[in-house]
Length: 170
Image 1: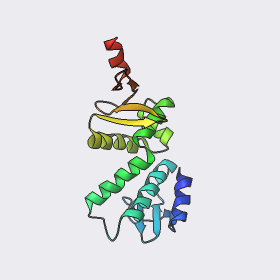
Image 2: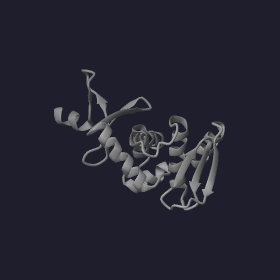
Image 3: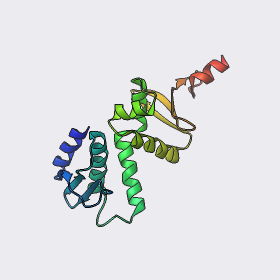
Image 4: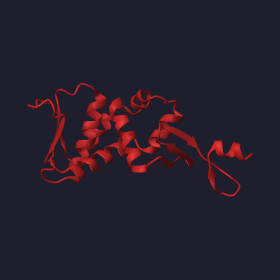
């Protein structure tokens, strides 16, 4: 994914400096005009992927000095979650066999703490349950108390039901 993001940045006319020597260790990435800098202290490709994706979003959706604009930071962070993970992506990863947070993180190519933060953000945004379709099949993504993914089946009435509901009514 990191390579795709580098290609996208190039297509958008952005210059990416991958190992920039920032004075502060707190700065991991920065976007200024048409240049994105990633700190030399970023060691893993997974972390570089997240930082680059976020800075590309800043380049596309931000203007001026936004360091004090928490709403803009939150919107950019949500766009990054949706781009790198998404509810559809959660289902695809689950169908590929992912069950633990570290497995999902590895499947998406992001750090585990980023994955957990994304799931927490989805809980805040969607509440207990999110619905999504993957390859024409509907799924329920339960976010509270833990991440759980279930395929929905259609009843004769046309209403969607979970496998649990279907067996209880039979």
